[in-house]
Amino acid sequence: MRFQIVISSLAIAVSAASAAAQQQQRFDDVIRNLRNPDAKVRLAAVQLLRESRYPEAIGPIAALVTDPVDQIQLEAIAAELSFFLFEDVPTRKRVAGFVEVRNPGRAAAAFDQGPLAVAPHAAPPELVDGLLRATDDENAKVRREAIYTLGTIARGPLSAAQSAQLIKALDHYDPAIRAAAARVIGRLKVATAGDALMKAVSDSQPPVRYASMRALGAIRDRRALPALTEQLNFYGKGEAAWSALDALAHLADPSSVPLFKARLADKDPFLRRAAAEGLGRAGDASELTALEIGAGNDGSEMVRAAMAFTLQKLGRNYVTRLVESLDSKAAPQVAEYFLELGSAVAPELASHLQDPSVEIRANVATVLGAIGDTTTVDALQPLTQDKDRGVAQAATRAIERLKARQ
Picture 1 (cartoon, rainbow, N blue to C red):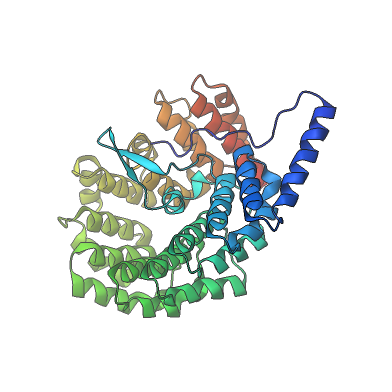
Picture 2 (tube, rainbow, N blue to C red):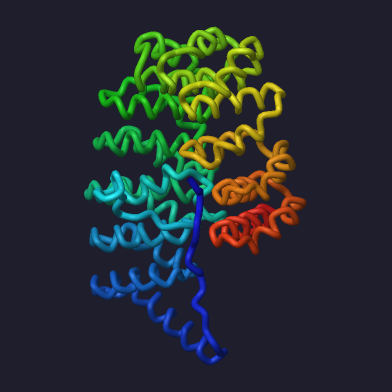
């Protein structure tokens, strides 16, 4: 599974200076039409700017995410999302190779791809503000697309006012928005959301409860330790138990180590995964033998990757084992592990840029763009000429991300 494949050029190629001037004049006219009182003209302008991938339109289009016409709002939100994604998310997906079904939403699908699927440039404040206002829109689809687009393209920390508006969404009348708000709060690490999240753990809707528990772990609110432990003991199994244990694994308090050890051999692979991660983050090496066996033999690839991550956290050398999972469905999970492990593993990870697997080369390059440094650019440069176009694109984007960080 590859994090990014291809992105269309963000600039319109022109053959001469005069043609470039004419093209710029044309786009200036299109930008003006975003303010046209005729809804059809506004909609056509957004569609044209989206199709052209004209990056200077990010700011002007922001005003239309709260347009009074739903169709324009949705088109504007989709356009903004497309400017930030390396690869656009299809509105349909294939099941069993031939049956097409609709995705629950383009923005939610983009959010699920993780932060490495998004270009490094920052979303302007007016766009973030507009998306936050749109999360309270009367149209349910607008609300969902807005909040997941926010979670996909925004970067923390949010301003105090923005954080307060996102936290307010935890009390929205639509449970889908409450659950989405919790997920976005976790992604953006909104530390001030602790009290509201702890209240949401008792929400009437299970998805809201589960997302709120995981968000408490993501924002590292240690006050939630007793409540999360109580939730784990109460539910015992299923998604509720996993959500509680996942949150505890992110908090990684020494008091939770007995829980992690007890769940390391649980029949539920999600609980085994969380238990392993908790031991690694807590720095507990008392289960090394079980972890080593599990990293090689567990029936779940997700769990094998989690145990390899934990062994790496505990000082063993498991980078190569983790890299092997970058050519599998566990690739997004492993990418998150590398982001957590950080720059310390970048040099060894760079040694896998010549891996025979196209998927591994591309994904290693993508990860290095997030955790590498100036020395990583030299290692990535040869891959910009890789025979596989996707690998070349991944290396090019990684270098751009590294330079943007500088």
